[in-house]
Image (cartoon, rainbow, N blue to C red; front, side, top):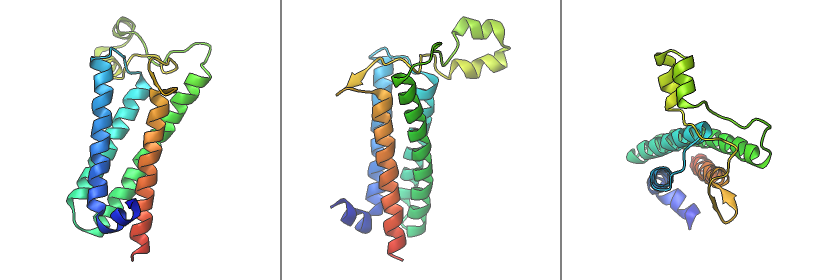
Length: 168
């Protein structure tokens, strides 16, 4: 059914992928603001990757041209691959934590050590520990689930591009 949908309605597939990214971002914000989990720098990078996949897939879905679908699929594939890499690296850190586990600096240390124009970007980079597992679902951490989602998006985009090339 998915393969037929990829052939007949790639716009719908791209729109659904974009919507899924937005849902994952909303869940991440829920965990942060309601669940009290502080995102680490790697979590923030994964969020940016999700935003980019959502924007690219959403923009590609707006166009009727197969070329736009292909270009959007390739770009979303690259971004999803990058997101999967970051999530895999974070999963590795969680499975094999380093001796000194710290991904970020504390707020006061940043303000005292760095000038304000360097400290402000660091403040918004997140402050949690990338090796810490604060939440699990079915035995997987957020980074593990993030990796699976990115791989799913990448595979979906790969099939979309592959099928688009095959139709030429």
